[in-house]
Image (cartoon, rainbow over all chains, first blue to last red; front, side, top):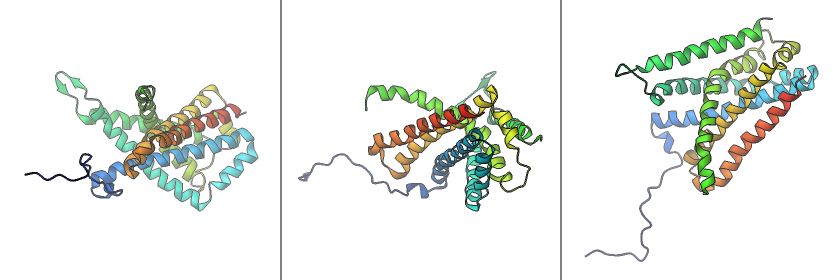
Length: 135
Length: 119
């Protein structure tokens, strides 16, 4: 004969630890990818501050450049660089999974979809560098 | 949650997605140059005049708008879910949304204003 409690169950809900994402490599990779967005936002902020400098004149811009030489800013930007590259790689590798392209009844291999992304990345980066460094 | 909010989701996802592409394509080289190589003196910094010369054109301004705005919405969407999943605060839905999308909208307005102000 079943027994009943005075407090009916609300439905079973497993308690999940706040640190659930430390459990597995795939989870850690997922959370690192999510956290990359914070560094994306950080450098957009840096860029907006630099644009403000451009808007306010040469002296304002020089002050901002000087502030970016601060070791703390360099360290933060170095970390940001790694996170943003991580974001880029995971993003480009995800493209073949998001688009299942079929040609002649066969699925186009993943490399055929992600490769153009990498080529575009290289071309765009080179173009930006060329514009800024040509003197 | 109101039905009006739900209908925003595909649009926000589109902004997230477009921002993800822009962040992936453009931010690494921008951080490498403006965040590391120029401040460390590894490469010669472009002068103020060079930068204004590039930025003040219509294409330059549009480029900067895209560079700032789309990645901000990418951040908003992804960070929202980071807060939900990482900290498990789905119940603070309204607050999280206001912080994330409000932040992105504020950033958009500020960025657009300064881009407009470039001489």
